[in-house]
Length: 85
Image (cartoon, rainbow, N blue to C red; front, side):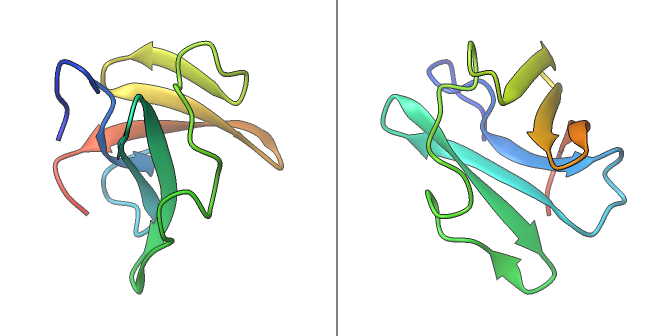
């Protein structure tokens, strides 16, 4: 859930909320953990990607509070915040 200190916390899916896979972005002290999630569960925090501040991290682009882009093998992919997994 987003908070004032961590406005980008939540569950994010590539393209649309209908996708089966996504990213769990959660508070991790003053940063965020970014974990890949699928039907079988999520990677442990800090094991899929290094913890990050998201803002000013070249691996991420904040489009707005509910849209981010994350770099991957094929360049940046757009993710939208969803209400749940």
